[in-house]
Amino acid sequence: MELQIIAVGTRLPAWVEQAYLDYAKRLPREFSLTLTQIPVAQRKGNKQTDKLKLLEAQAIQKKIVDGSYTLALDENGQQWNSLQWSQQLDKWLMHYPRVNLVIGGPDGIDSSLLRRAEKKIALGKMTLPHGLVRVVLIEQLYRAWTMLQGHPYHRA
Image 1 (cartoon, rainbow, N blue to C red):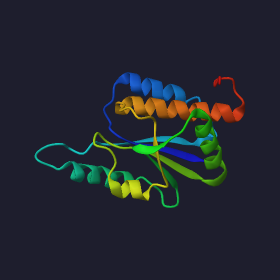
Image 2: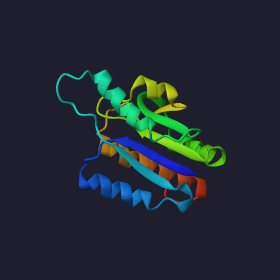
Image 3: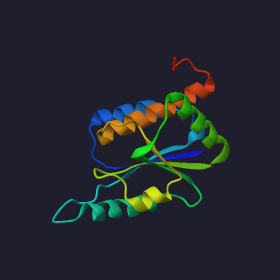
Image 4: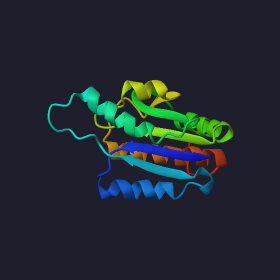
């Protein structure tokens, strides 16, 4: 399975990259994990928020391969516990050769991209910095995989 995390934002603190890479290297090679970073749309002048989100969505859509399964991280999306993440990952492994997880920019994800996504998911009700979202997301993917393997990393 090809697993692509598409994230808006390219200049994050070193601790984000370090934590992300720590979990990414733990995932099996069969995941073919890719982190695709999209530059944040320039917030110069009087550009409207909707226009900025649309520009970011257009850049994201160029990175989504036709026929792949796409999930958008959105504050109004479904919230999964770790067992549900594991069940979803198992489903993806069985049914989808390509899965995209999309993290939007500072203003969120444009409605056009939200409509295109097969699922909208939320990591919780709180607002998190983008770097932390990447780390929490990759950790949950790792945790889900360890649960499928019967690995003791997850202790319920």
